[in-house]
Amino acid sequence: MTAQPEQVQINEVVLRDGLQNEAAFVATEDKIRLGDRLSRTGIRRLEVTSFVSPKAIPNLRDAAEVLAGLQRVPGVRYTALVPNVRGAERALHSKVDEVNLVMSIGEQHNLANMRMTCAQSLGQFAEIMRVMEGSGVFVNGTLATTFGCPFEGRQSMDRILWGVEAYLALGIEGITIADTIGVANPRQVEKVVSTILDRHPGLPLTLHLHNTRDMGLVNALAAYDAGIRSFDSALGGIGGCPYAPGATGNVCTEDLVHMFHQCGIPTGTDLGSLIEISQALPDVLNHAVPGFVMKAGTSDRLYPFPGKQA
Amino acid sequence: MTAQPEQVQINEVVLRDGLQNEAAFVATEDKIRLGDRLSRTGIRRLEVTSFVSPKAIPNLRDAAEVLAGLQRVPGVRYTALVPNVRGAERALHSKVDEVNLVMSIGEQHNLANMRMTCAQSLGQFAEIMRVMEGSGVFVNGTLATTFGCPFEGRQSMDRILWGVEAYLALGIEGITIADTIGVANPRQVEKVVSTILDRHPGLPLTLHLHNTRDMGLVNALAAYDAGIRSFDSALGGIGGCPYAPGATGNVCTEDLVHMFHQCGIPTGTDLGSLIEISQALPDVLNHAVPGFVMKAGTSDRLYPFPGKQA
Image (cartoon, rainbow over all chains, first blue to last red; front, side, top):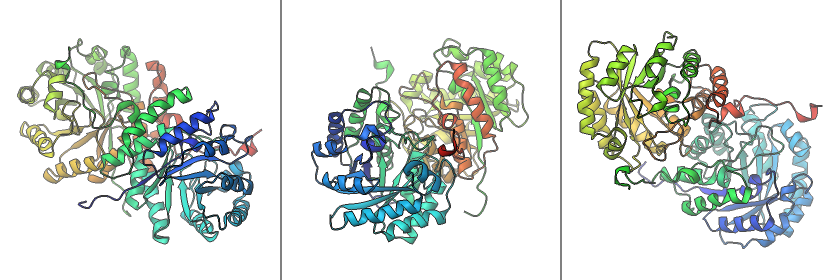
């Protein structure tokens, strides 16, 4: 406890996972403005969009325009979700630094979400890897529903390790384990993370959490204590998945950063800026957002003593 | 990790800390119905009310009527907050099993909340202890703002230990450390709890958390891991303190129980019943409540596969 705790990196997913399920389309210029502000807060990865069919997710139909409009900040990896070969080609054309592939650990969720079996997803990823070859673009793979599937429930540790190893066998460089529907608990997170990192020391492993049952922060800290140093989160805690029943908001960026900072764990981000940007979100979205610290202020906030007030 | 984790006890404070700050008076019969339902869920302590002046907290002006109306369930301790000698006498007359005294660790918060210095509070508690003598009623003392004061900020460990020891010197049997304004973080909670329990092994120590910055659950688990086995919480996560600026809802009973159960930590309570009772709260209060699991369902919830639907 005497050494300085190791720093974590924050990956902002509000533009993709945050916005994909919004009822109203968020204007391209609003997305660009939000992305540009976020790029300057010290976040390390900005998931900008998804190169899916505009019919599947109309809110992200401006994928290429958003990527073209952003002012790239050195040190930030601009990444996009890519569901197929066509999407990978479009992402490369848009000069992303990283693509993010997604398959669900739960076979049924993969069928519902991607309309493919897991074997078909992996076959397609092999094709995508050929497209990516020599591009220099980092390939990350997300394992959705790692901590539970809305149709099948809890997934076995063997199944999770199978997913990790299938990704690594394809040459995927980084892996994100996702609690897509917010069912993970801290003891489970500790076990899954430590098991994966024991088997694959040094693997660039990211945790993607949702706060559906208010366990986002407790899961994040359990994962940190088990060795994860990279976290996805969404400003204001917005988000949800159209193909994952029961999924609600992502773990909230500024609440996550606030917890880490309060615990003495550096994140390299400017919490004050994150809170300011989050406080502007309700005007962009035309609704309130779930974040806590953007409403309450930080734990350091002091109030004037009432007796001294007029 | 092979032994069965130790059970925690859940103390329900919704009737007191939950309701005291509600904009509208909750009918006495609604309070009694809620208390009676909660008494049968496996909770171990029910904080029913506060014997304060009806002018100070009009919502709790029916303290004696609520206590008289409840059907006492064996194994549940019915407790009331008591601010002074008159309150203690009223509580004894209402046949409580326990009284709960409150002083703030932060001198300024005690002045704002109780209109007394800490020394004056302790003097008054000495008088209350004389009133309680021979009654057989358990005396618990709460240390408010243990983890931070809205006017003074973070409190020192020495100051916290001073509070614990001042209570024990008066003959107070159990102690609650309260994060009144929801500023605690899990590393701090771990340190405060382990320091108190190292000095006072076997002390009946309770943790009272608010979820103001979404750290309620992570703080609860940190406290469990540091040795606390008794937790205050409020159904639906409602609550707030009229004299603590920035204070919002208590940690939510069913979300807390859900996390413990998911982690394999028994609570002795029936989560299904707690969720049902919480789902009825918005109708009693005429507004939504902050709880998560009452909306999302438990982590075990399964959905039908969409392809199999009509």
